[in-house]
Structure formats: C-alpha cells, structure tokens
Image (cartoon, rainbow, N blue to C red; front, side):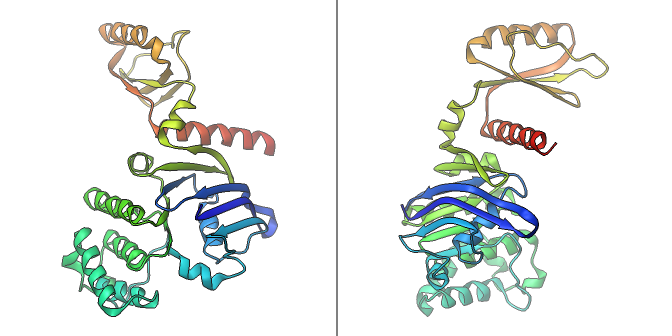
Length: 313
C-alpha cells in the first residue's frame, strides 16, 4: 500500500480529539472517498499525512517512510488542495498553475503543456488570463485543483474540491480525478457530495467523531444496510400522516415527506399499501427506489451522533 495509517490519534489543546484510533490504507491507482460531517476529523487527517500537523499517537507510512519525521519528503510525495480558497490576488489562473508546477519541480515545457491540458479539460480557458480577484468562486476552486495536480505527487489529496463548481465542470473534474488514478496516483478526496462520490470512487471511508464508522466499496456498504429499498411518500397537506405497517422499517417524516426503509421481500405489499393511500388521497404521490449511499451515510452518522450524545449526557 502506498499509504498506511495505523491507530492514528490527534488531540488538540483542551482535549479536542480530532482523530481517534483511526486506521486506513490507500493503494496506487485507487480513489478513496473520505466522508464525514463537519468536524469529523477529515482535514486534520490530511494535514498529518502531508506533514503539516504532528500526530499525538499512531503511525503514518507513505511509501514506507514517515511524513511526520521527514516533512520535506511529504511535500514532494503529496499534492494537497486545501479546503480554503487559494490566494490568487494579483495572478491569473495560468500564472498560478504554472508557478506551482515549477515549484514542484516540473520543467518549464512540461508545466506549460500540462497547464494548457488542464485548462482545456476543465473548460476554463476563457478565464486563463483573468486576474484572480475577478474570478468567481467556482473558477477559483477549479484553478486550485489545477495547481494541486499540474505536477502531482504519488499521493493526491483534495479537500472538498467541488465546492462552488457548477455541475458540468464538476463532472469534468471527476474525470481528471479518475485520470490521476489511471496514471498511478493514489487519490484521497474529501467531499460532502455523496452521490458524486458513489459514482467516482473505488472505496469509501466514513469518519464520525474522529474514528472510522464504516469502510468499503459502495456495493459493500449497501450490503451492510439493514434494508435495501426506500419508499418515499409525498403527504397530502392537511391530512394526518399514515401509520407505517408492521413490516416497514425505520420511518422518517420531514415536512410533507415520509421515507420508509423496507426489505426487498416486502416490496409488493409496500406498493399495494402506497397505492391504497394514493387512492384515498392520503398521499399525493409515492416512489420506491433502491437505498442510496447517502441514506446509508446519514444512517451511520445519525446513529453515531445519538450514541455520542448519550455518552456525553
């Protein structure tokens, strides 16, 4: 494995435990999606791998070497796009990308060629020579992505790179992420967009309160769920919410929507029940879909949140 993390713990002053006995690994050519609520410890983890923060306990091995003991090696081996916007005041996207490529050791010709490739691949050529202070948030984010990957290290870490980016260019960015993996890089991408991650990553790690709540491929995480279907009902305004049948799983009601998790074996009676509700105008409409990775993610973090609150109480 290119990156091996074992029993990593980071405790900040006043006892804030950002990472708690965390272990994971990433191989060459793999895209790992790192999911978790705000404050789950994702950014702290990346900063430790990059040699920017020293762990309290545990070990990190990047290609067999310790990035904490050798931060200069970590800077060479890692490419990191920070969560915060890159400072682009006074420079254009083309200049910023080329400067970072040269700082990371790329030749002038190689960096120029790679810069033009990225600008074209992300469809941002028209802003290539625009001063940074005049760019939108999405173009600034895309520029920061290019700065991180123009001369990539063996490990590329991207902290919420799609924030503020429009849907079309988000898709183009994910294509470039996959290309990095095809070229042999290991990629860790922090994101809150679970739907996009499901389509684009090889494996997922869900962090919650600093520890690993779940890990696996999207298919493996689905198999761990207690149900594999969800029945979504749009409630009729002014009508009392229907009582879920005994065969139904967990039901969640928000505003005019009820979502019920069910097993695939109960699908026929779920449809029949929903059709009956629709016929009596108790609901406006219904839909039965496979459970999504977002449903599983929310279930994992909600359960952990409840456990955490109970312990605190």
